[in-house]
Length: 636
Image 1 (cartoon, rainbow, N blue to C red):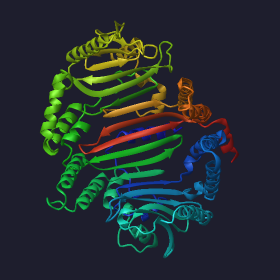
Image 2 (tube, one colour):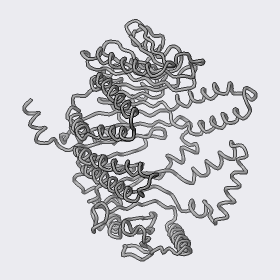
Image 3 (spheres, one colour):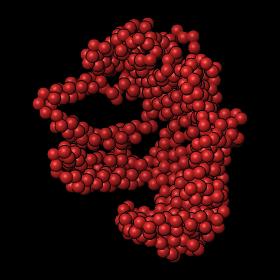
Image 4 (cartoon, rainbow, N blue to C red):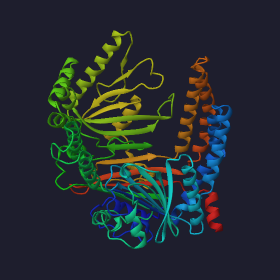
């Protein structure tokens, strides 16, 4: 738990995006120096002593998974489907690969650092992936030998696979791929290399894989690393300096690379450079990419402070793109002036989100099809005819009243419910409440008429909601599980699990009941907005393990029921046997996921910092240390 003064400082900082942020990466982020500057995706994590307790918690989960024997059960299930020599061969293969994998101490490989990057391979048609790991110095050599053993086993599988070894100064590289590819740029190879305690694993095309990475590692480079690239350095100044992880997604670079890849694939940008149909398809794809080429970059930094994991994210929109059609659909949403307007004090979870403007998206798609798709105008005409034939006009029947910003709330159940122990309410903002109510009622009546025509009743009844026009709508097939209540109040369409749940939200809006602002747990663990926001959320995660265990039990029971419903015939006997054996395997996951009992809550806030910057702050809070953990720390 954070000291009160430090916590107050964080809250002020997280909700004041105009403050100055980070400089360069901290010194312990070393592997980024060997990642080339032209990658479009880069993520880098380092060991943080402040997270040792969290690593130990997850280690207990993995230990429980190993003790459950699920891996052995699955292997036995696979082997049982074989017979004779196939069964013996499968057993031998499993034992061989198990022994090979055990030669590598996987946890040691990235014990101190892990960096991963992706880019489009130069002069090729595929991506290039690179993972660099700095582990324990005393096991780096043996781990490399274990990885080479795996490569040697892969080579033995086929005469068409070649394993080669090269010395590149201080870097030792092993590569495996097709023996004699006719076009090396079209066939990927897998590569492992080591320098000291750094091990690299990657996939690349061409004859000189990761040559720029090797040059960076050996100091013989004529290029720059991603951490020195101007765009990354600029992005890094927008967030707080990372302690655990930094992630950079250069979306503008990605779209530029894909565009060049499309030109490479068709042979040029001028008509006549290739087959006419290929040229048209490439042109269509390039137009789609240009439509979606909206953001410049996004960057994420993470830190751990006490029992809290803090994530800071910035998405930057390209200059001049903030008013384009897609940006309007995604970002020009009405903010939430009072985030707690409908959120009761006892809400366990809530989420407010602008979603997308469906009207903008619909018009954007129609305009694009008409302008860029061959015969697009005809397709749009056929769509309009189809919609007219069923009596639906998107503008009249949906866009005229639907705005779409959404609020969801999870509440303690007011009465016993068949599944779970919570009530829920969804709210969608509307432009015209009276018109929205008319359209919802007309829609319900339309569905009722269609069902009655097939002899199925739709059960509709008024409910005691503190607003006019609310109705409960259900069907005999689902009424045991859910009886949704639907209605419109002012500028919101409500859909709730019960009248009591909706009344709770309405009472908060009317000032008759306290809002989430008076929930001490939310004030302590959540991020509390002080001004209008684009999105805000809070989620109780204290029962995450129990809820996952309940879900596992339901899946296992469902598989058992499915097994009973499968007839015992020669054609279906094998399927029935698989379901019979899978059900107890799934059940073993229940105690495993129950070990995920160290989370408390998750909260986030999204705001705009000017017209081009969207900023999201997120905090995950973990439960206080257990007595055992505290005792161990005191002993040390």
